[in-house]
Length: 168
Image (tube, rainbow, N blue to C red):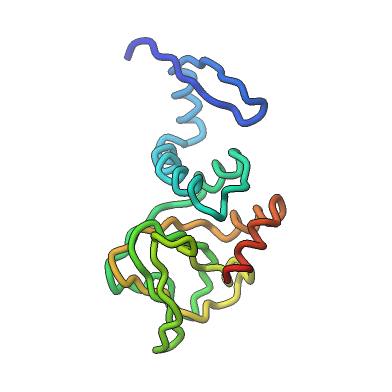
């Protein structure tokens, strides 16, 4: 559809290259990134603005954005049940969730607070069954980050592990 140039910013070295649109499109198709690019574009501002990830390099934030996915849950939905071995980590984008152990409510997390994440124990001890239920108190939007993505960051940036254990 005509001529187009695309600007791409590289993380190392930090240079701008002009690449023909056709070459860029072929690359996107070859690596099946066409569907992921909008998801990365939506996740990246969340990652960039979250206190947990402020110290990360651009490339690290890109990896988190690429591997994460957004999901929605209606009010009263069970997001993570007690006993499940789902090891993912969650950032609350919109809404509120309640964390319960049995019938006891332990805490409520809100998207507008800095501690708007859960799944810490699952990331720190993968394969261990969850001991709490996380229930949507309102309609919620979440960013789900695979546990291995967070664990990989521990090797590169101990600050992430420190922040998680300090808040957990």
